[in-house]
Image (tube, rainbow, N blue to C red; front, side, top):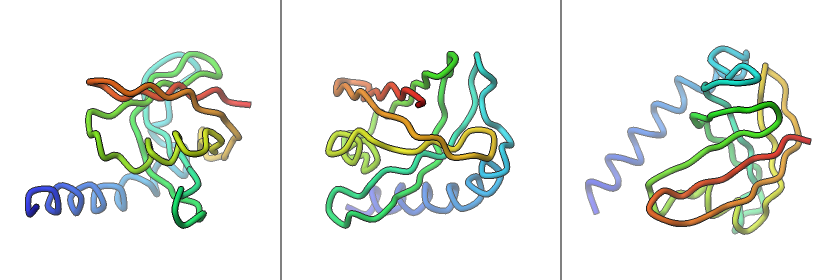
Length: 112
């Protein structure tokens, strides 16, 4: 579908702009608050690392990320393998995800 392709292309372009800033820690959430992070999942088909910037709410070592998109690849990757890395403050940290599907698909990330 053409509209899906346009949306995917738009997100890819946005991610290319946002990800470099997040890699330097700009825009990351404080220990309690809202911000953006880069998560790195393992591709469930390719087995390769896949990175995506996401908005998150953070309370200490727990981060909440979500999407309303039912076909979100990062969510499907977390369902297949809940182990991931989260870039916070310019550093990647190991984490695990607990995912829940519904009208709003949610993943709670627990930093190691």
